[in-house]
Image (cartoon, rainbow, N blue to C red):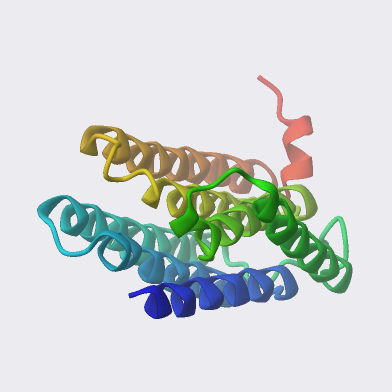
Length: 212
């Protein structure tokens, strides 16, 4: 299934670029939902059908592809925002940085002492590129909701790398990673509500003005 894995990971990288170059929050959330749904297939396509792989795939699809995107879409309806209007770095420069980060990820992956079966695949470079994309969104966006999207993409990159270790990693550890992700989104939802209640905006720069 190496060809299927390559197609999935190439689409994941293209979705990284889409989120970096788009200011439409709904489109970014839907892109992250599609990315999560595609990544949920990797445990099965990489390791084959087994109870372990199917449980991990089902859990990832439910959280990454359905539940968390639904929470985010509900959040933007509550705060009535649609676009990232004032990024710290413009969309085109951010997209250019994303391209450079992806190239750097592929070059760095070639230098890693990987097993032979992992050297020719896209799992490691796609994982690194996706993590760097998440970092870029976290660093260059002002809206808290967009930063949540960046965090989700960052976790997607970690998930891709974790697929390589899923046969050796206990299921409880993988479930713990997904639980941490879910808790982080809930915490960010609380922050969104607090900012919106105090300032009628979700610009994270206004956090410095919150008083006890």
